[in-house]
Image 1 (spheres, helix red, strand yellow):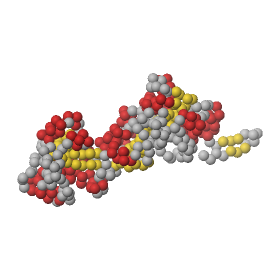
Image 2: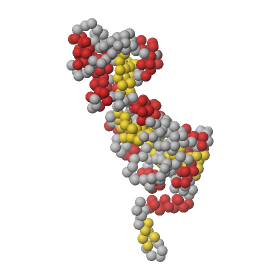
Image 3: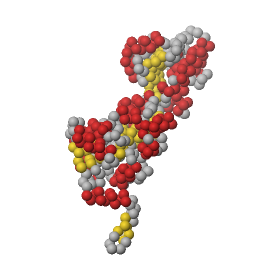
Image 4: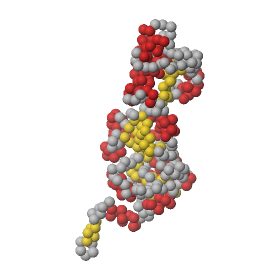
Length: 402
């Protein structure tokens, strides 16, 4: 920061930055307090750290990766944080939370794909950048108020970190104000991974540092940064969790089930792939890379049978290729690994739940009003009507799927 010094006579000096003067005075008179947390029963230190954050103080704490400097989401507190870190004011900060209930306050709506990533990745060494739609942003503004909303959601997105460190989470859960926490290092220096390194950088410049030796840094590298939104999953920064793991955690697996897996379920899977690819604006064969796997199976299928001729014909008319489809028997592993299962009839759903009762929360009738009748052995018009019923219900479930 440029500061102009100018003699004014009688040895006086004028300083054109009030914030800088306050920072100098603080550095010269106050040492950083060390708050010891050995167990989660150390409630005095936990509460003091949270109270300091709520008052606008800067408090460093360990995560499972590196130390962060916690700061209340408040204009003046953030200005001080920028001064301390020598960081550009326009650079974004990441919200830190201590429990899943806090997440719902800031991200009011999540689709199934987002929830799956959150379930696997948080808490953990992952920063998730959520891309919110207009309705979710409106609810977030209502939840938080204009001032905090404007500081956090500058471009319709919000980066969130939920560290896998019980001491950090205890402090963050106690804090009443939203807290951001960039890594504890001056610009251009390596992030601190111990209490002493924090003090080497910031002793006298921040108010407190949490020393939690029982919950120390594990990875000693920055978190992986992932953006999730209408274009799927993007890894913005490599970090403690590999990209392949992020992709596995966020891939949505959709399964359609009928009897022989030669008519209804392959038509449903084919249409669903095309439906998703059209919305995302990508070729069907790129869906796996964007985190969508769509498959089909039959409860009484013989493995390796091609799709029926009329099913192939009806799908070709919709630019859906079933030529490579081969039937396969539904397995317990299919049920367990799928995130959404759509059955063609009540009997199919009953079979699935008998095989795996814990699947009830994710297994649905594709048409909630009636069975989709088996067209096997009937003419092309019956297949076309069957395809229409299938496609109509998949479109109606857009919100579940996407």
